[in-house]
Length: 349
Ligand SMILES: [Zn+2]
Image 1 (cartoon, rainbow, N blue to C red):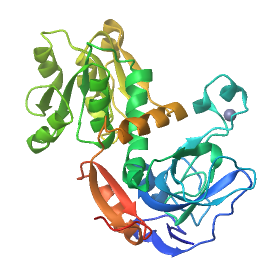
Image 2: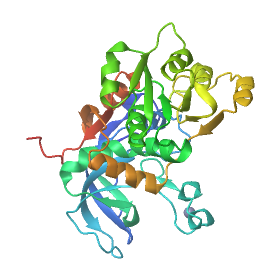
Image 3: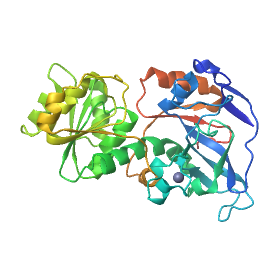
Image 4: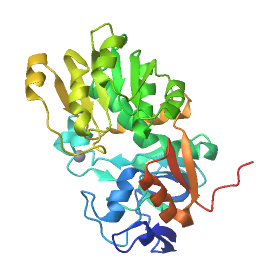
């Protein structure tokens, strides 16, 4: 098959549309012909060789994809050729002690599509049938390939990690990002009041359109002071932070006593000096997002496919130009999801 694969780590140019071996279809697998594949920032780390996974090269990325079943393994029941599908971006063994106690996220055998096994940058993807999710129509492919990652993270952070409840106030810093934009929408679904921040006044209307009640544009006033003013001095119940970095003390200071700071990213800085005095004087709780569960992924897809949450698409690239798509994503100027279109994709009418 053809795939946007890389045979060495390096700059975006190492990604080339080239011939690689077809994925074999095991008895419990199906093979999906890819239509659309979503990009994630971790793809760039994998290509550059800085991701936490050791990859066997050549490698084919692509955690989020959608397409049509073209081959069904001998032991698979309930799936047939021609069915439009997407797949869980990760799946657990289902038999270990952690899986048995309903913690598949802790399964030592957890496999991530596109990292532990080849993904949607290839023309075909081998998927265990247990990881498949049916689509009503191939017209849902773009949403299915865009929403699973960012929205499942947002869903997990709001409902499981920070446990946001109706009537609470949450702060979402730098809300123009993919996960942050989903956090705004999911926190609104949970019934929260959402205060968002952005570095650019130009992005403020976009963030308001996602449902944010108030948007603070970074300026001379510390965010914590702006939040205090908006909440009558009370502070936010939770901060849902995707950026990390030196703003962490301002974010902690935005919380009410006993508030929660949930973190799922560190693009603004992977280390920061934390004011520990304020953490224990104010009883702040700092929570790290680790990984979603299959339930989170399923819920995320349902929210997106039913239109309750919208993941904007920033740009589309033909799969042959995956290197250009990586370069574009690396510039971090986009708002929304970047997706790759395979030649199988029917032209838009
Ligand atoms: Zn397991």
